[in-house]
Length: 468
Image 1 (tube, one colour):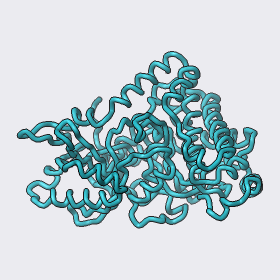
Image 2 (spheres, helix red, strand yellow):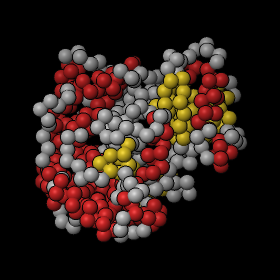
Image 3 (spheres, helix red, strand yellow):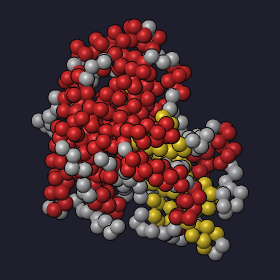
Image 4 (cartoon, helix red, strand yellow):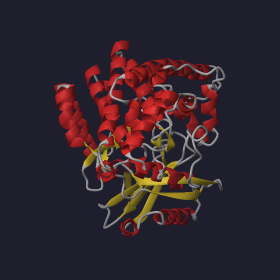
């Protein structure tokens, strides 16, 4: 993070510090990666995570991770965090996303209802070396490129293009004033226009179609998809194990609604006064356990249905369990007692515009254990690109968008001037990052095979995924 005292150095002093850091961590050194001799067993790391998750959902998590090397990568943030700990560092910390793979970027509705593009997952956010996010993104591009059947030369070019755009964006941001950096955002319509000229006609049509779906994925769509009417009252649907209403989880427990109302009240206290007034206009109706994501499967996530003016005025909140960041063993200790607050504060610092109902809470489960949660709106026009259909040209364009977006996120809390000076004008870092990404994609495939072997040997239990 940007030390307040260091932040008052002159731009020239900060740039000099960035250039001096090349002596400690040469830019080319970021491409020299190999697993350490005592590297932790990746399956063991995943098993360690499983001990704090909902036991019956862990086999579903493994099933989703085993769908492909890319889905494995998405769920293996803890594995890569341990690997990144041994990589070179320039010494400049930022507020990390913590899991900056390419599927954790996307569009969502800002408070003024315009679609913006940004990093959109902060379960692992923590201050740490800026390189870790960039390397996580880089390797995800190589893994995705392999899944699409792209040749090595093309994959190297895609990662280098992402890195070059990160570097160029950081240099642009280094020349701006602090408020200008804070107000800078990635407007989806501007991205769409650039995409249409860069990616080609077919990809442009697909992009616009996905944008339309993103705009339609709102609370009214959630109302039609996730609720049913029971005795004249709306209730959340039951689709176990993916959606399990609260009354099915705690059948016959008359105190459950009172407990939920207490949780909502505690969450309310973390909101600014104007947002508390907004929330007060809604009443609690129902809640359900809802499985989300790949890496998050097994952590407790709930959807809460509330109604305002009438049954046509719903508010869907998602309360998602926040455990300790997978980065914490290798970076600085979390500054927040509540891990949900860690997520919220990291998101607010990193995103150009955040959910107006973002908050956190500590809740006691039916097992009597206290857990931390962060709360946000569900399906607030959130969407991500369909990487699995992209051509090499389209993935290159998307990689550049993600690279620029990540630079914006890092510039908000880190020393953009020092990082820009460290990276410089040449492509030394870009080439190193591309080499790293390919080496790590090799490692990811070995780890994926290790998980497959663990499943075949009966070491882990794997659920059967429903047919699509």
